[in-house]
Length: 94
Image (cartoon, rainbow, N blue to C red; front, side, top):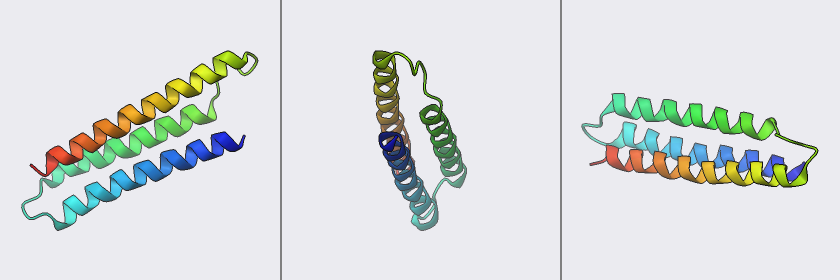
């Protein structure tokens, strides 16, 4: 159970950092595209909700290999989503 808790904390921390980056862009950059920043912030919140739900709903509790594969896929998706959102935030500044 502790690994699920750690995974949830990791998700929350990563999404919080991305949200803060986007917020700094929105507040401190002159001529910032606030609508685009709002869309990215909404995507961050939706991604966080989706990933937390996936952590809470474990698939195939009876088969150990299935659970490992499920969490491996979840961690891969977390990395992909985090990188994609970070690229969107970087594109806002250009």
